[in-house]
Length: 254
Ligand SMILES: Nc1ncnc2c1ncn2[C@@H]1O[C@H](COP(=O)(O)OP(=O)(O)OP(=O)(O)O)[C@@H](O)[C@H]1O
Image (cartoon, rainbow, N blue to C red; front, top):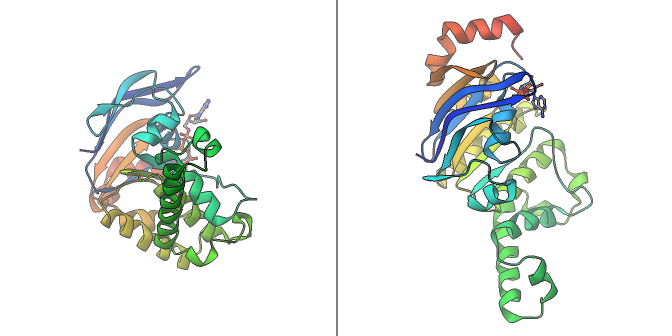
C-alpha cells in the first residue's frame, strides 16, 4: 500500500467538504477519484499535498504519517502533483520549468546557487539538467525545450506540468483533471503517457471528469458525493452502481 487516508474530514466554516473519508492506493495502481461538481475531489488532493490540514483523520504515505506536513515536505517525501488550472512559469523555457521541479529533489538549493563554482555543486547541477532532459523526453517535449512555456499548445502545457512533477522523482503522482480541455488526439496521447508513467513503477491518482478517459485507464475508481465515498471498485462495477448513477443523474454528467 502506497497511500492511506484514514477517516479524513475537513470543514470550511459550516461546510463539511470531506466527511469521514477513507481509502487506500496500492503500488503502481491507476486509481481515479470521480464525483459531481463540488463533491470534494480537489479538496482531497489539497489535503494529501499539504495545502489543507484535515479537521480530523490521518494521511499515511509509504508507511509514514504525512498529515499536516507543509506542501514542500510532502513533495520531498515523493508525492508530485499537477493542478486543475495550469501552473507554469510562462516566461521561462520548457527546460527551465522542469529544472525547477528537479531542484526540489536535489541538494542544490539557494546556498548551492551561491557556491556554484564548487565542483560538487557543478556535478549535481549537471545531473539535474540531465534528469530534466529525461523527463522532457518521457512526455515527448524534448524538441520544445528551448521554447517559452507560454508558447506551447494547451496539450503540450499540460504535458509540461506532468514533466515538472516527474522531475521531483515522485513515487505517487496526483493528476487533477489532466484531460480537461484536451482534444481527442491529445487525450489519447495523455492516456499513453499516464500508462507509461505507471509502467515505470509510479502510482497514479487521478481526478477526472472525462468518464471515457476514467473508464479506460483506471484499475479502480472511487466515487465521492457531498464529501463522502459512495462507491469503490473496478470501472465496470462503479459504472453500474445505483448510488453512482443517482448522484450523477441528480446533478447532470459533464
Ligand atoms: N478553501 C475553501 N474554502 C471554503 N470552501 C471550500 C474551499 N475549498 C473548497 N471548498 C468547498 O468545498 C466543496 C468541495 O470543493 P472541491 O473543489 O473539492 O470539489 P470538486 O469535487 O473538486 O469539484 P469540481 O469537480 O467542480 O472541481 C465545495 O462546496 C467548495 O465550495
